[in-house]
Image (cartoon, rainbow, N blue to C red):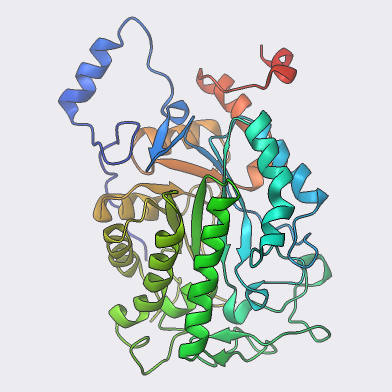
Length: 388
């Protein structure tokens, strides 16, 4: 069961600068002639990247790539968020090698051709967008080789490919049994993540997120429910963290100064699985290696885990990781209302708030949040008449 802890002290609009009660009071006095803007609409800096506000568009799988290449769908899908006033937009979970895709329609980044297909999106963000554009690098492991969701999302029969995982344990009955990864596989995957990170920096992206959540490959190594190895990559927490940390190190080394963070599942929601305390330990190790933020989600290891739901149900995880590991966090999970998002940031539970469904429903969510909260969101000049 999750026990919510008291939220940590708020940060000063910038990673790592905690506000004391006295400094808050001085800030109020100095700004007495001009009201403080809503916390949600204050800038935030990750490494050398300053975001205009704390609003993030979550990575959302679109299953609309061809051979892993971005298509016109991605230009329109991502382009709408470039104009909507968010601070940061994530490109969907992107396979670092062909076998790392969830489905044949998933986005990939294992060649320069994949980077070239993204060039129109990057160029549009640079020319017209307010938001920064980042990419989530991923490997699906044992959850790969499935059909797209609107065709059932089941493991492929025709066109299936070999899946790999820390242990030869299928995700569920009827799923492909993965091959347990050997040293060659691990080297190949590490190098694939590193190459993708280099490619991301070279093509002009602003940030990188390493996907170690939702039951995909790196989470499979972390969780004792999916990692039954008896070598130095299994067993103890230290051993289970080893490969994900090696992957992070490879990405950090080749990311050319870009902010690099990690998405985690704070708990497996299952007895004997990955826990919040494990997540804090992992976050501390990542921070020591130059990690810039932790994007805190949950679940995904087991198909039938009993996961609670409701507005902001995962926010306490982000608050705990932020306080105990002393690292910036992104809160996610059924966040949709402006007042809710403002409270999360203003109370110091997280530094950034990421949303997916809310943006699918309203690509201009930040505009409407700014009106509701009395803040300022950016409008492209072509849309200035919408600002009232």
